[in-house]
Length: 324
Image (cartoon, helix red, strand yellow):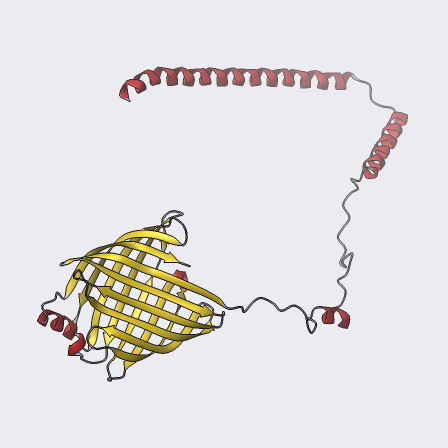
């Protein structure tokens, strides 16, 4: 590449020199034209000074010619502008009873398609996880069916370790009602298969799109055994290119009491932060890679250490996202 550039510099120098010469020639030509124009103007002024002054008859003739020119100019559609009038040329008519009746949909007319039943299923995460005993599997998905105002939601998430054993799994069935643009109030039930013995919870929460397009979900759960906890999840999507999307995510869990069988303690239980980068082959299907870090706090961290687990963990993930 250096050898090619060495021969390129003389050509560039010649091009610059040619451009400078051309600009100088144009400048001299412009000066020459300006000089000729000045000489011609002086010659015209001299001729006008030497010409005899017009007689009164000639002056009358010139005035008539000017008036004829103005008339011709007006005839061509270039009449002088008139001052604007205060009243509009076409006043807006006052709406009548017939006009108001025509704006109302008559009985038996075709129904508007603004509240039809729709459905949506999103498998947001289906990923392989790098864990100590091999490669695990995690999933998180959501789906709904209903109208703009009322929906039936189904949510599920879980995790399997490298040995093929399920460490956690749950499913939720929720009724959602729109309470504001982009926000739904949800209530229903949740069933936990793992960890520990299966357990049912009553659930109530809110989910939607916050300003600046932050997706938020906050849900409180009360179990049949008296155990309660709450989960707050937030995520954001940054469009790096038309197909490359960076998705940060955070999930916070707070427990209302100790539950040694499930390995959780009261207070702040755990915080999980993830960063995933996906490539949307199509809008419906996108593989991704990322990193996830989780840390337990308080009594939850102590219970994990008692069971021989780490209170904090970081792992690499790879999977895909699909919706239909």
